[in-house]
Length: 159
Image 1 (cartoon, rainbow, N blue to C red):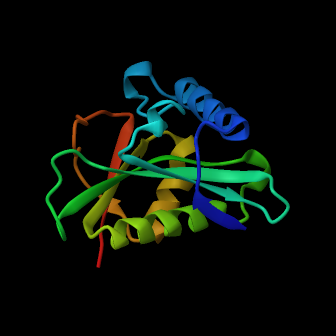
Image 2 (image 1 turned 90 degrees about the vertical axis):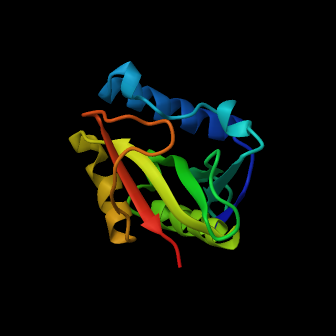
Image 3 (image 1 turned 180 degrees about the horizontal axis):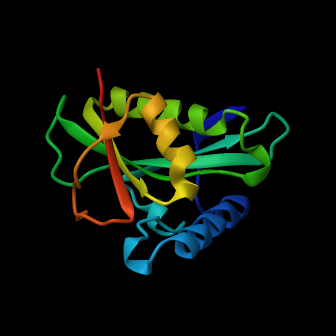
């Protein structure tokens, strides 16, 4: 598996992100959907990565963005966005590998912590377990988020 900085505008990535958004809107009220579409992921503040198999097919993706107003060196705050594994690739360690790459990027940038928002519904339980296994703990809303019964907020302090 290769994980590299990539473009969210690739056709196969757009298809995966469209599937991601469709699932988010199918499981959460519209005001509780915070997933980004491919055009929002093109912002200069976003680093987007994909995971591909050795023979090329897209396995998953994820993004890291620096939160506006985050402190300087050693105090920055990153947010994970658009973590998604293709259905056919689930259970193969794709999400773990993408998460590790994004956390490496955050550490290299000197971020003090990385946070995320995910859902509270049962369909999000695998994501919450993944993040907890990697040291993320519950926290309150951060950045522009507000308390929402459909959102779980998690954060990880980086070394």
